Image (cartoon, rainbow over all chains, first blue to last red; front, side, top):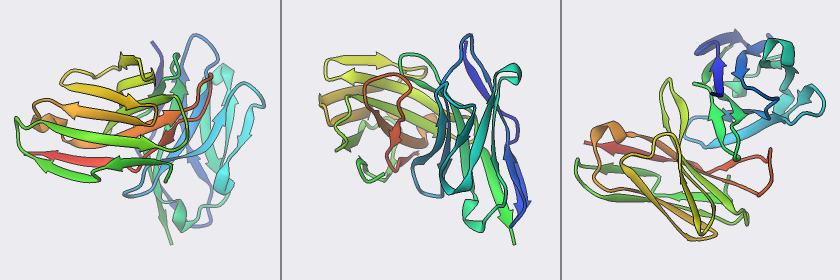
Length: 112
Length: 113
C-alpha cells in the first residue's frame, strides 16, 4: 500500500538559516508528489508538485523540492527561512484514482 | 482558497446529534473530497465524488455520509456525532485528469461534547 512518511514532526530553525523538511514515500510506481502548507486557521495551500517532469521542482515563496527515486524521497528545502514560513507542512502522494495520501505533517518554527 | 467555501467554520455539538457540514466551490471542478485532520495523523480521506452520480468511500467513512447535490456542492453529514469525531474537516476540489492539484477550503473545526 502507498504511504508517506514525514520524518520530523517538529523542525525549529533561526530566521535566515536553511530549512529542510524530509519526506519519504512508498509506491510501486513513480507517483505524483505534493507539498502543501497550512498556516494557522487556514486551509492547505499548494507549495509545489512533482509530476514526472524535472526532478528539481521550484515552488512558491522560495521553496523547492527534489525527487530522488533511488531514495524514495521528496524533501522540501528553502535557503533562508523567514518568520512568515512558520506553519505546518504536509507532504502528499497521488494515491491512484486521484486520491491523495498525506504524511502526518511537520510543524516548522522560525525563531528570530 | 476563496473558490472553495465551507460552512460553518466552527461548530460545537453534543453526542448523538446529527450535523451537516457544507462545501461549495466556484472552480467548476468535477471532483470533490472530504478529509479530516487530526494532530499527528495528517489528513485522512472520508469520502470523494467524481461527479454528481459518483460517490466513493475513503479510508475512514464509518459514521459519515455525504450528498453531492450539484457539481458545486458536496455535503458531509455525521448521523449521530460522537466525541472521537472531533476534528478539523476539509473539503477539496480537483479538475478531472491525473496528477492535478487539489484545492482546499478553509476547514470546519468541529467539537463533539
